[in-house]
Length: 240
Image 1: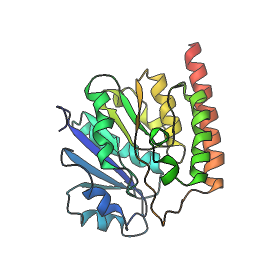
Image 2: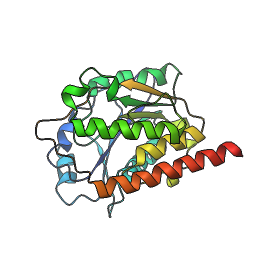
Image 3: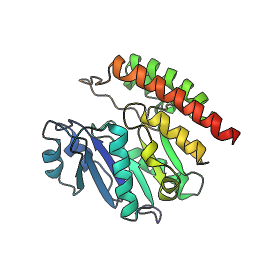
């Protein structure tokens, strides 16, 4: 527990056999439960997760459904098991566990329903994050400010997040975009649910062997569609 909050860390994973055990073992001891959602990996991700020193619940998708769908599966598990807060940490070890208390404090203090990391607010951004990522994330963040309705939020692609169970129950999780573009769509859903969103500085982590698995054809078109759909749904909801 952290400040009387029961916590569940959700780790979506796809082909993360080299890093998943370390990611699990890095989760702070005050977390009550860890759930790993293997999104139909074709490597030994599930086996390595079970071999981690820290115990976790392993859920597996029979077919690949996307990172957003994996997170939603983890959210549903957290709700069913009575967690107060569901936290998302990646299976590739790119989220610093030391940042977790800062991500939880606004929720514990009643100031936020959803806290998300903002790597652009951290002094190590230009040291750690590849330039192509800086440029791409900045562009998507500016666009998401417009489409989501949250003008104060930046680094929309950062997946290091914490959300209250109460906020989760106000969302139509089955309608959240399941693949790349999930974080942009999630913000739009939160805006329509009147959720309070707070940005928290988090440390960007990129190792020397980092290589993005995102390709332009799997990102530009889907995210463009997600942003347009999110904007239209928000405008329509505001007119009702």
